[in-house]
Amino acid sequence: MKAVFVLNLKSSIKDMYLLFWSILMPFAAIIALRLFVPSYAGNYVEGIIAVSVFFYSFMTTAFIALSQRKRGVYNLLHATPMPLWKYIISISSSWAIVAIILSYIVLLFSIVINRLDISFNTFLYMTPIILIASLSFVFLSFFLSSLVKNEGHLSMTANVLMIPMLLCSNAFFTMEKAPNFIQYISLINPFEWFLNGIKAAFINNFSTWGASLFLLIGCLALTLIISLKTFKYSDQ
Amino acid sequence: MKKLISASQLMKSYKTRCVVDHIDVDINEGEIVALVGTNGAGKTTTIGMLLGIIPQDSGAIKYWTSEYKKEIGTQLQTTPFFEGYSVEDNLKLFAAFYGVSLTKMLIDEKLAAFDLLQVKKMPAIKLSLGQQKRLAIIVTTLHNPKLVILDEPSAGLDPRGQREIQHIIKRLKDSGVSVLFSSHDMLEVMNVADRVLMMHHGKIIANGSPDSLMEHYQTQNLEELFFELTM
Image 1: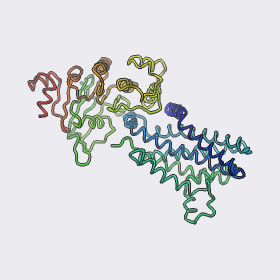
Image 2: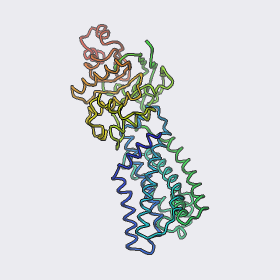
Image 3: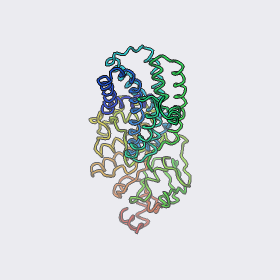
Image 4: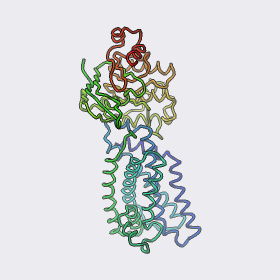
């Protein structure tokens, strides 16, 4: 498992194209907010980090998983004695580590640009939230890539799932004035749990942080089971 | 001779099309067995079932060991490699799948033996077809398997590449590894195989050594025999 984890981490870090976009887009958002709405710029940092992690862990990995399946490597993996759960956990963990590093980079950039006063505890409490959430999103991305046949289908299906998750959350708009049914949806939205966990880490609200972590761990178990049960080795 | 694989009455169909029709396949220790047939004859599906990656609709497969995946090396027709990984990292990754740890020296030795040392740091998917086929065969032997299964190892290669693959298959046998490979090329089969399984429309239509089959059917070569049996 360790070798698979290390090799995938090495390969992910070397993928400068994906990393560039995963870092550049949040940087652009932070700079734009600082320039155009300076008084609120600091309030959106948690949302930007959450969206960045969500996109990397969900969208990027879904495309990689689909591409590997279409190349036939999962078929070859199937012919080896490596259990599927070990493979999925190993590579998902390395992607989760990349997601944590990305979020630290985005947070540090935001601290510099917005002159934020962030304590070490924020980093400490943010880490398990990002780890568990990004693992859940990666597991979900395996499920998503198993549902579709090609990149076009994947892009559409990902949008169908991601956009409601983003819109039914407090990432960029407050849910307080949203219609009731949207508020109910936000209660069962894993992205909202993730966002709440990060926000709680920022303000050291341990009860909300603990509740978010608990919900995300449940989500992690569920998405792992779904990814294992639906994993497709090949298109046949 | 010890049987490594004994499959009986294997059947597989996709929707209403029967691609493998109740066939029996035995692979014995120390043998090179060629699975021969036209495109769509059912060779790849048969190999997939023997490898345990395609579930059969009916029939049974007996292996000489319960942990057969640890003891079989596999090269699939598409020679897939992980995108974003170098040649060296692909070898390390597949070795990890088999629970084997490769030293730098061992990797260099294996790559040098297959004339791939100079492309060690290159992305595996950027190699030429011939290089990919050779790399795929290295992957099949990383864990010192008892049996190697190669799905069309020389397809798409030039005559030099095809000859290299034939040498590699013979070298595998010399080192005590049994080989099952599929092919369209009757000359290659004639040069390499101890036994031939001819497939047509999902059925085994001939099974025996090249010489015994030619003698039995009174033909000059395997190609002639194949055309005679599939007319």
